[in-house]
Image (cartoon, rainbow, N blue to C red; front, top):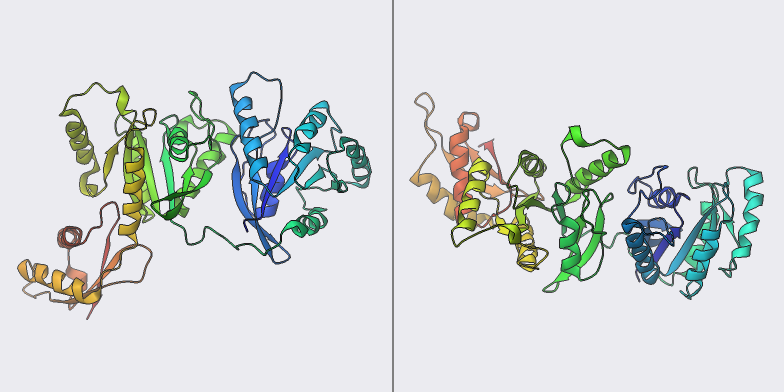
Length: 437
């Protein structure tokens, strides 16, 4: 059983603060500015031995013509449909509002357990004032005054919430699932790609750069393989990151990279591979992630049968020694090669987790070493005796030899190229170390 709890309410009542309290880390952005949370945001929590998923949502408003707020309403409704239990957050400081009452009418039709949570009840007076929210008539349960910033009252609330869970749930259902993140500059089509892939509006999409503020995780299945795809906030140059909210979004995107197995760096075909894209690629390699380049907006390029080859050649030239990074050209808006892009990401993951049997590895690599042995140092011959793949999350190969300290980087590149030539490590950084034998 998934055991899913959705946190909903109007803007700026403290939904993200409660979400962060429940998942015990700062995964959702908190700010006094209304509308900071836009997409649905997921985390994992546990209470009294029961594990459950938590969905943070954007602030619900009605009667607005703002393009974001219309999309936020859609995201909130999807979260309500998905949830087993709903936490309806209201604000003790501002009291009962017309928007609270209007939203309560929407919630009644869900026919799901709903808890009215009176947040910001940080003193006895505010806790007593929480009684006015009984007028909402939305829940069969009592109103729960809490202070999510300090955690006061959340224990009593969770004691009740978990009574609706028949099973213990999974501690972390995503722990052993491949994680693929989509990174790139703002407005290159990251959210559109995710939505086109899964066939529903998982992320809010507009023509304005910076729509996605949190990292949005989605479980997806292709050819029987489950994996997690994460859409992230667009990453700009440091000089262009102005708002505190955007700063935290960028930090969240970078943390998502660190937690990923494979990074898709999405590039705008009309702009090519720019310095910021190269920085993301370097960061992925530095963190030993699988990496691929997805050139989006291919439909906007005037082209003939040679254009793709020429652009790919130019990009590979920019990549220098990292020509092992695969490149795919897509048009998300026309759904051109979007499934091939995910197939490629899964292939990169398989390459990253591939284990080469030691006997096969030595049969191949010792023959390559015999064909081209390491250069001697001051008349001393360097003899590589054998090699093995270390039990790490990414491909690391140890070569055992008599003088490891004198093997130079050109020979290391030779060994890496032979490993890539004989065993498929496309899209994966390969590390070589030398040990004395």
